[in-house]
Image (cartoon, rainbow, N blue to C red):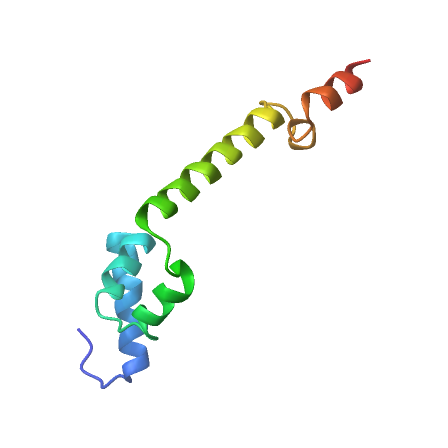
Length: 98
């Protein structure tokens, strides 16, 4: 046990290091976030992001975005081959086989 006085920065660094070792970095961040005050105005930020849209409109937008994302993924047809090849569309892959 150390009896010397340490600075707050040294104590914090030591504590974070111990937490990371014992809890892992993700759980350390989750633990520290419990004691961190947020900033800004939640109500103002929410209004800027969501506006006056209804819950139904937001849900509809989420569903549309998911459907578009699924279409793009199906179109790309990723495979377990080298990265550059995997990013090709099916037509481009067929062209590389000839």
